Image (cartoon, rainbow, N blue to C red; front, side, top):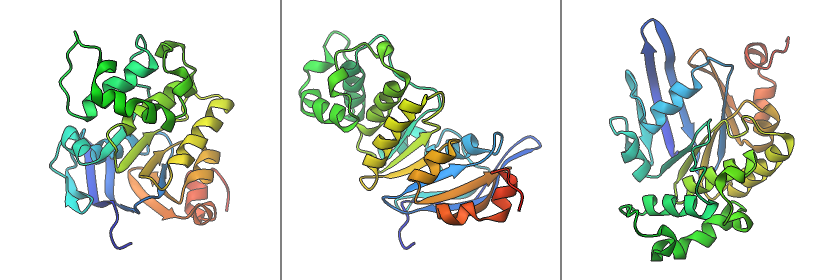
Length: 249
């Protein structure tokens, strides 16, 4: 991999006696979907928080688009092209779908919020709103209050809001959490549609989703990268089958 979009080198992070990340290294290829899996308590959230700049590693380096971003905070990394959706949906329930997206567009463009001005009336929003809604298949729900969306549609909205800044790397933190079968299918279709237009780091427990979407998979156990490979290689990896997939070898 000549020019990975994200390169992590020998990352360590501890909290007291707990080693949450231990000598973790990883490279993400541009345009791919790379899944990060592991049992509860494996250190996935701690690792993601270090990638996004919400917490800093004790040791190690993080390179994004060939730049060392290790000392940069989350907002600075976001400006360089990182975006994240959270395990718990972050949207404004009492605003419409269009208003949620409009606020995200204004924030992505660096506009100051003026609460006496309707964000939907600004030129930048008028130009970008329809394409942003189309991208996540929510054009038909634009006028609906976000609280009336299904759980799956709320996830679609959150992903759409994250995409308004045209990120190069989108980190999806357990997007299928709490989702019913129908919502999982629709969100899987959306993620597949995004493939190639940006790089996606997918943190997910649903193995059917992971194996259907991922180009590469990394398995995290007790803060360590115990395996990285294609879906086929991960399925056949003895240590992974014992440590995570719960199979005997």
